[in-house]
Image (cartoon, rainbow over all chains, first blue to last red; front, side, top):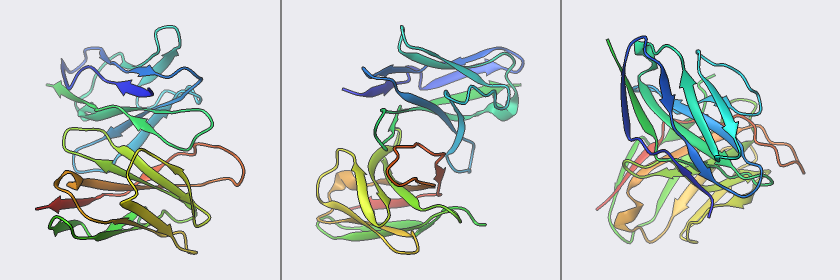
Length: 109
Length: 117
C-alpha cells in the first residue's frame, strides 16, 4: 500500500539548533515527493518538492530511494519556522496526493 | 487575487443529511482537488476535477461526489452523512495540462469545517 509516515507528532528544538523532520514512504515506483507547511492561522502551502531540488527558507530535503525517506532539514532553526509540516507523495502517473499525519515543529527561544 | 476561496466556513448537519461545499480556484487555475482532513490527521485525497470531469479519485465511497463548472469552480457533495464525515474539507487548485500527468503546485483554500451530529 502507498503510505507516508511521519513518526514524530511533535518536535521541539531551540533556536539556532539543527532541525530534521522525518518522512518515510512506502511506494514501489518513482514518486514525486513534497513538503507542505501550515503556519498558525494560515493555509497549507507548498514548501518544496524534490524534483526542483530547491532550498526554501533554508530548508532542504533529499530523496533517499534506498531508505525510502525524504527528510526535511535545516541547519539553524528560527522561531518563525514553528509550524505544522506535512510530507506528501504523488505516485507517478496519477494526480493524487498521499499526505502523512504531520509533525508540529516548535522552535523555542 | 484572493486565492482559493471556499464556502461556507463552518457547517453543522445531522446524520443522514446531505451537504454541498463550494470552492473557487485561484485565478488562472483550471484544476480543483478536494481533501478531507480529520482531526490530527493529514489531508486525504477525495478526487480531482479537470475540464469538468473527475479524473482521479481516492478511496472514498460513492456518497462523495463532485462537480466542476465551466468557470472552473467546484462543488463537493456528500450524501447520507455519517458522524465520521466530520472533518475539515480542503479544496486545492492548480494548473492542469490536457493529456499530461503533471503535478503542478497546489494552492489550498482555508477549508470548510463540517460537523455531523
